[in-house]
Structures are given as structure tokens and as C-alpha cells.
Length: 260
View 1: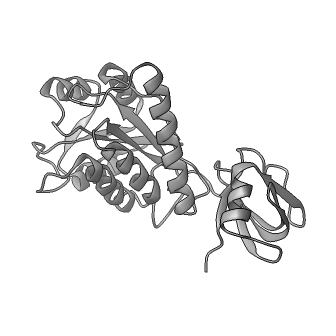
View 2 (view 1 turned 180 degrees about the vertical axis):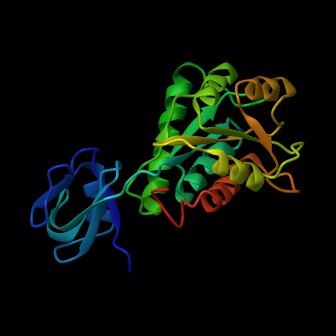
């Protein structure tokens, strides 16, 4: 059985060595002790959300702290090709569901997009609360998937802001039902022509329930995006992104070569 995973803060494991002891506190420690009822002798993983993972054994526990003796410390490298889900805001929490599932499947970052046809609007205090909720959902999904990395939920963008992100990306793909080329073909062609070294980002752009407007498609393609067909059926906004992540992870070799 896999060890349960708990998150500490980024950088907290930087100086840890095998044989050392790490004290986990805060809400994660309370969850481990009061909900999971972990006690001395049990195995556990502690991840810092930034790639480091401690595997060890609980040596002491209290309602507020969990002390773990480190048996091994591993560092998971980030892949050179990073997948970013650009998810249009959608009603009924479908946008959050997309971010949650994409996180379990290995997405590296999420960008909330205030598209023209998005019914949901992030304004004022609601924007800050909604962003924090997305980050909480993504963090919980990363924990569920036992990931060492917690994907970043970036600041929400409107279409002009998304155009800037598109221009900076290695590849930006708009998932569109009127596209001609299949997503697999677009990804394979880019992979063959990509001569970049170091980190590159692939943006997977998903529109809202009403679809991406023609004006938005024109603007984003003008910034360098391409359209691609995910399949013959029209998927919900909560499904399209995760489906694209699965295909892209396979084509780009991220599942067979995580650092690729």
C-alpha cells in the first residue's frame, strides 16, 4: 500500500538528510493525527509541493505535530515540456472540476480565463476568493494523486492577457470543434519541429459552455495559437481539458519519460 502524503511548505525539506527528523505542523499535521490517526511506527511521505519528497517513519505524534524520521529524500525534476491548462470560467463548478482532474493527470499549471462568453465573472473580492478556492482544489488533487509538485494556479486573465501568454508559449492549442487537424497531429508536428532547449510550455486552451467566440479565436491565432480537434464529439468544458492532458502526456512522452 502506498504511503499517505502530506504537504509541508516549499523549501522546508531543503536541508533534510536521511536519519534526520522533520516536524510537520499546522492543518496537515492535525489531519494526519486526528483524521488519519497516524502514530509511531507508521510510514508516511512528506512533500514540499516543489518537487522534494521525504519518505520516513512516524516517531512521535501530538494533536498539533507529527515527527517523522527521514529514511530517504527524493527530488522530482520538472519536465522540460510543461503542460498548462487554460480553463475558461464556467458555471456549476465545471471549471474547478477540470482543474482538479487535470491536476490528478499531471498538469503543471492552470490559468483561469475570463472569456467573452463565460457566464461566471470574477470581480473584486470574489476574484480573490475564487482564485484561492481553485488553488485549494488543485492542492487537494495533487495530494490525492501523491504528487511532489503542486500545480500553480496563475492569475486570471482576459483574452488580451491570454494573447500575451500565447505569444510566450512554445505551443498554444485552442481546442475547437471546427478545427481540421486532430490534436495528436498538431502535437506530433510541433514535437518534430521543436528545437528548443530548456523548459517550454504547451498551453491547452478550453472555452466556456458557449464556445470560444470567432473574434477570440482570431486574436489568439494572431498571437501564435493554433486550433485542434480533440475528437468527433463535443465535450463539456469540464471534460475537454483533462482529455487533452491525457493525449498530450502520451504524445509528448511525459508518462514514459517524466523529465521529457
